[in-house]
Length: 531
Image 1 (cartoon, rainbow, N blue to C red):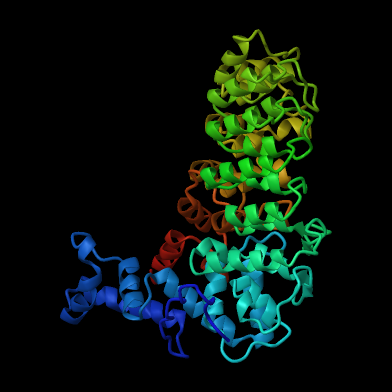
Image 2: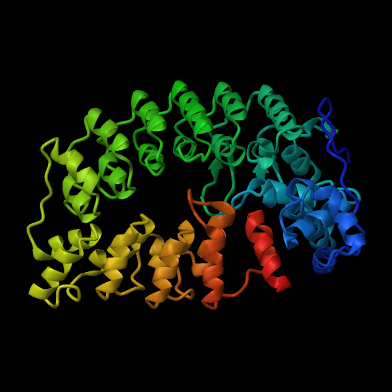
């Protein structure tokens, strides 16, 4: 099988690993090198010297010793060596068909699991022997090597292992993200298939059990491949920009400049904001520039979302800045609109403890409606106003116990919003720590997902447990690991959070789980294991 696309740069040569390469053995070698290095052993110092010049003044650490081991074996970093060793071990346990299916699963992403292009590539580089004929087309397409196939498939021809259209394997391939030669080869492959004509792009979907009846190809280009060039090619060929997925997911791209490019080209091809929740998804990010773009391209600030409120309600829930709130107001946000619970924006701002937003809304003549002691108590807790909250409890000692489930979820909701003073006050008042909020998750799950170590520590100190479940069937450690690997939140300190959960008795991540984590977390786990 060819390993490069005709006309593209060849793949980098793969460093050789002995068949017996073992991660635990390599870790022991790194620890032995570190001991010798710290003891000024001449041989150890000589081995470390070429790779330690930039940190010569720093004391040697296990992560630096691991780098030496990796470089001696021809790898750029310890995580790259680790991926290669684990890929070799995984490949040795699978027959060729199962191995290729695993590669495609990692490259394309399946179900709730995001694609992992580096892991897919590490496994791909361990392929040995001929590819089973039935799987060769899908693998070539996901690699952007359409021209290596003796017989070109039609764009809509369904291919194993996922019973997906040929073009879907190209559009969903996250190898786009790795740059050349992959990105160029994949784009050329897509263009070649699209040039055939005769396929109804609206009907071509990637089968996915998490999203029946499957996902549109344009979504794949935007969310999985993250390739504006590929999305542009699909749009030019007639892909439907109103597929119910693409605009929404363009708004969530963590690379905000790329998100703006994707949004612009979707709208230019006729995408409509209405019914997509895309504006609300954009407001999940603190991105005034992106918000200004969306509003200039016709997003409706007063379209109701799933929770009944419109964009201003959602922006308040997400803790958006005064700049974002002012933009929404300037574009006509209805200050009298009510959400599903009947709350106007000013009332919601009070119940979220958003004092700056309250001042902004008051300047527009909008004031909160808090007629009951219960509502005033919730507002005081949200604002971390301990004096008012305790005074209300003194007047009505059973006030906290009288709160319903929807009101009690203020604790996980404020945790999700990182409102630490508010959470601390509620815990000090005796708030039930395990109450569930968004995605049926407790406050500790929310804090772990955010990598909010300060709140994790606070919640653990008030009786929260790492064993608390969430709506996806996992526990708090699972929430942390999934976010760190697939959906890291801005400002999250996942290392400190991991340390706190382990100290609280949570199990150490498995080798497979560690392999998905950022390098910083992997290095610390290795250091901790070394003792």
